[in-house]
Amino acid sequence: MNPEQQQAARQEILQRLYQYCWAYDTNDMTLLASVFTELASSGGIVADSELGWGPWHGKAAIVAALSDIRESQPDRRRHVVDTCVFDALSTTRASARLYVSIFSYANGKPPHLVTTGEYRLRAVNGSDGWRLDGLDEVLDSAF
Image (cartoon, rainbow, N blue to C red; front, side, top):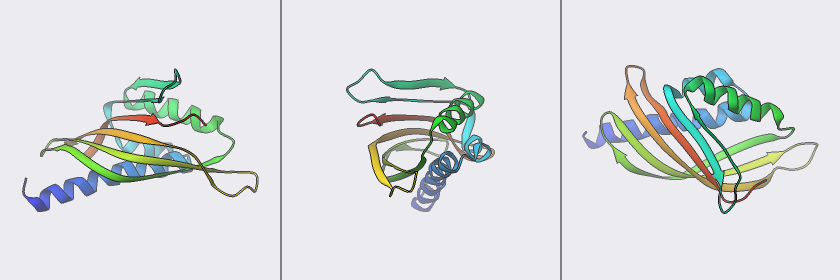
């Protein structure tokens, strides 16, 4: 890949992650499903604890589980991602690490930070462009 192709691939992969965050935060499960491959996997843990979720295998399972979690949360969430490092990038596969900060607001209270952590993603480039094939999360603390 030449530098322009690498930059375009990075931007498309990050766009999928941004769509994931927006979809979860706005409870748009159709958009959420669109970011994953059919055989994707996802899950997460809270560091230094026994708390975790998943792993879920397959787009349908991921969307169903995240929809259930989202519906159980009485507050509104805002997932903010930054500081992306691509560990690997080819014409067909990529892996990256990013920081995530999760904010919450509800009941007239101002938004506040509830936790931070890391996303680790795997992406594949197919006939429909780049999609997430794996998204794993390690949170720094429970909330």
